[in-house]
Length: 197
Ligand code: HEM
Image 1 (spheres, rainbow, N blue to C red):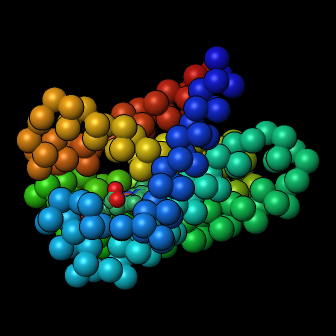
Image 2 (tube, protein in one colour):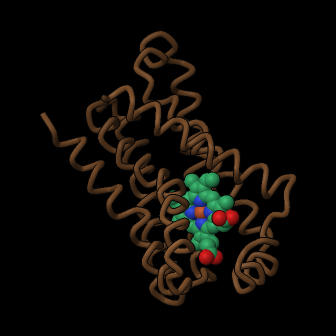
């Protein structure tokens, strides 16, 4: 069961990271999005590109960090992947995400939802790094679980979108709700994971 959920999380993380890299690196990018979103992305191209590529790196590297065998057999690799994950993925991707949250589609509720996600992502990253530097590995593990639960918001956000189209829900309202739904339940699950015996 545990292996099945981990494998699913891996596949979804790599799938969304690949989607982002292909779409924005080689594909149509924002051209297929809602016109208001597209306009915001076009007028803040550096912000959104920085956000997408740095965050996609976090989504690609994160799953490896939870692989117990890699940690046990290649601790130096774990440390270096962790530095890139936190230093580039979370720090750069999160700062650019925070900047883009000001221009997010879906009104003030969506802007606050994405800003909350960005602040939580940066904060849990700082706590995870400080715990590792302080050699408190139990705390480091807890903060990394919370942090990756927030990275995984990129996946959950895209899982909530198809029902919006299938059931014909009003997009702006649904998107504002998703800006919160994509990460708050993830944090609840993370908390359950870190607290369980
Ligand atoms: C966890 C913290 C994150 C925050 C705060 C955040 C924030 C945002 C914001 C504000 C937007 C613009 C949305 C709009 O204008 O309505 C956006 C778009 C986007 N983000 Fe993130 N994001 C995060 C994580 C990620 C991750 C891990 C990825 C990895 C692939 C990612 C990939 C994208 C992509 C591809 C878009 C463009 C929209 C699309 O094509 O679906 N984000 N993000």
